[in-house]
Length: 108
Image: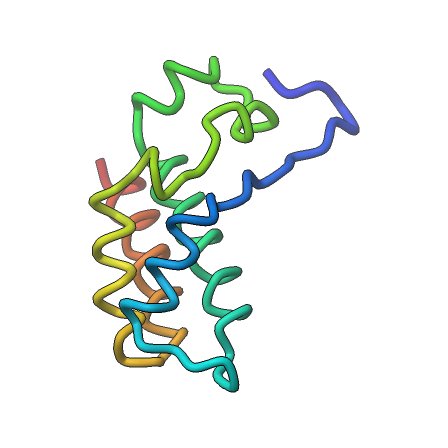
């Protein structure tokens, strides 16, 4: 259980996965690649929090999510789906993925 006033810290995506994301999605230096990374981290957090294995590992304490490290390393299949959507350069499609994962988890 989360203690009151305890901060939730989103883990950073490792350099390797940041580079893979930006390069595979063919983002240029002038594109919104920083926003791409942020939106991807949010979607990966949504994917991780929908996974019962995550809850087993962090004891249902969301403030321990950063203990998992890079969520792209932790959820490689989700990362792959995100990269495919990132190729469209439409960040809303990545956000929709995260929302879909949350909706699917809520339905079960």
